[in-house]
Image (cartoon, rainbow, N blue to C red; front, side, top):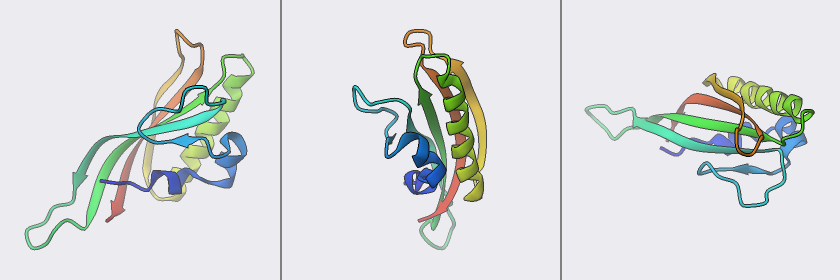
Length: 121
Protein backbone atom coordinates (compact mmCIF):
# COMPACT_ATOMS: atom_id res chain seq x y z
CA UNK A 1 0.00 0.00 0.00
CA UNK A 2 2.55 2.55 -1.18
CA UNK A 3 0.81 4.75 -3.72
CA UNK A 4 3.14 6.85 -5.89
CA UNK A 5 1.60 10.14 -4.77
CA UNK A 6 4.72 12.32 -4.94
CA UNK A 7 5.50 11.09 -8.43
CA UNK A 8 1.92 11.78 -9.52
CA UNK A 9 1.49 15.31 -8.15
CA UNK A 10 5.07 16.53 -8.70
CA UNK A 11 4.19 18.30 -11.95
CA UNK A 12 5.55 21.57 -13.39
CA UNK A 13 2.30 23.39 -12.50
CA UNK A 14 2.40 22.20 -8.88
CA UNK A 15 6.15 22.89 -8.58
CA UNK A 16 5.60 26.44 -9.86
CA UNK A 17 3.60 27.10 -6.67
CA UNK A 18 5.22 24.90 -3.98
CA UNK A 19 8.66 24.05 -5.34
CA UNK A 20 9.64 20.78 -3.65
CA UNK A 21 7.49 21.39 -0.54
CA UNK A 22 5.42 18.18 -0.82
CA UNK A 23 5.42 16.14 2.39
CA UNK A 24 4.13 12.67 3.22
CA UNK A 25 2.81 11.40 6.55
CA UNK A 26 0.41 14.36 6.78
CA UNK A 27 2.81 16.93 8.23
CA UNK A 28 5.35 19.47 7.05
CA UNK A 29 8.46 20.38 9.05
CA UNK A 30 8.01 23.21 11.53
CA UNK A 31 8.61 26.57 9.85
CA UNK A 32 8.06 25.34 6.29
CA UNK A 33 7.34 28.31 4.01
CA UNK A 34 3.83 28.50 2.58
CA UNK A 35 2.31 27.33 0.32
CA UNK A 36 2.95 23.59 0.59
CA UNK A 37 1.28 20.19 0.26
CA UNK A 38 0.93 17.38 2.77
CA UNK A 39 -0.53 13.95 2.11
CA UNK A 40 -1.22 10.71 3.99
CA UNK A 41 -2.78 7.31 3.45
CA UNK A 42 -6.26 7.08 4.95
CA UNK A 43 -6.78 3.40 4.10
CA UNK A 44 -5.37 0.75 1.82
CA UNK A 45 -6.76 -2.48 0.44
CA UNK A 46 -4.90 -5.06 -1.62
CA UNK A 47 -6.60 -6.55 -4.66
CA UNK A 48 -6.59 -10.08 -3.32
CA UNK A 49 -7.17 -13.17 -5.47
CA UNK A 50 -7.22 -16.88 -4.77
CA UNK A 51 -4.30 -18.04 -6.91
CA UNK A 52 -1.51 -15.50 -6.27
CA UNK A 53 -0.38 -12.70 -4.05
CA UNK A 54 -2.12 -9.38 -4.76
CA UNK A 55 -0.61 -7.51 -7.70
CA UNK A 56 -2.36 -4.16 -7.09
CA UNK A 57 -3.66 -1.96 -4.30
CA UNK A 58 -6.53 0.48 -3.86
CA UNK A 59 -5.42 3.24 -1.48
CA UNK A 60 -7.44 6.16 -0.18
CA UNK A 61 -5.09 9.14 0.04
CA UNK A 62 -5.77 12.59 1.46
CA UNK A 63 -3.82 15.40 -0.19
CA UNK A 64 -3.92 18.74 1.63
CA UNK A 65 -3.04 22.07 -0.02
CA UNK A 66 -2.00 24.85 2.37
CA UNK A 67 -1.56 28.59 1.79
CA UNK A 68 -0.91 31.59 4.02
CA UNK A 69 -3.40 33.51 6.14
CA UNK A 70 -3.47 36.68 4.01
CA UNK A 71 -6.64 37.11 1.96
CA UNK A 72 -4.71 37.04 -1.34
CA UNK A 73 -3.52 33.53 -0.49
CA UNK A 74 -6.98 32.01 -0.93
CA UNK A 75 -6.57 32.17 -4.71
CA UNK A 76 -3.16 30.51 -4.45
CA UNK A 77 -4.67 27.66 -2.44
CA UNK A 78 -7.44 27.29 -5.06
CA UNK A 79 -4.91 27.21 -7.92
CA UNK A 80 -2.74 24.68 -6.12
CA UNK A 81 -5.71 22.38 -5.48
CA UNK A 82 -6.74 22.63 -9.14
CA UNK A 83 -3.25 21.69 -10.30
CA UNK A 84 -3.17 18.72 -7.90
CA UNK A 85 -6.61 17.64 -9.13
CA UNK A 86 -5.45 17.92 -12.74
CA UNK A 87 -2.37 15.80 -12.00
CA UNK A 88 -4.49 13.13 -10.31
CA UNK A 89 -6.99 13.19 -13.18
CA UNK A 90 -4.17 12.82 -15.72
CA UNK A 91 -3.01 9.73 -13.83
CA UNK A 92 -6.49 8.22 -14.23
CA UNK A 93 -7.39 8.34 -10.55
CA UNK A 94 -10.67 9.45 -8.93
CA UNK A 95 -10.54 12.63 -6.85
CA UNK A 96 -13.01 14.64 -4.74
CA UNK A 97 -12.72 17.75 -2.58
CA UNK A 98 -13.49 16.98 1.05
CA UNK A 99 -12.30 20.14 2.82
CA UNK A 100 -12.31 23.77 1.69
CA UNK A 101 -11.81 26.03 4.68
CA UNK A 102 -9.80 28.60 6.55
CA UNK A 103 -8.32 27.02 9.67
CA UNK A 104 -9.73 28.57 12.85
CA UNK A 105 -6.47 28.70 14.83
CA UNK A 106 -3.84 29.46 12.18
CA UNK A 107 -6.09 31.24 9.65
CA UNK A 108 -4.32 29.24 6.90
CA UNK A 109 -6.28 28.42 3.77
CA UNK A 110 -6.71 24.67 3.36
CA UNK A 111 -8.19 22.52 0.63
CA UNK A 112 -8.19 18.75 1.10
CA UNK A 113 -8.65 16.30 -1.73
CA UNK A 114 -9.36 12.61 -1.27
CA UNK A 115 -8.06 10.29 -3.97
CA UNK A 116 -8.98 6.66 -4.60
CA UNK A 117 -5.59 5.64 -5.94
CA UNK A 118 -5.48 2.29 -7.77
CA UNK A 119 -1.96 1.17 -8.64
CA UNK A 120 0.08 -1.91 -9.44
CA UNK A 121 2.65 -3.15 -6.99
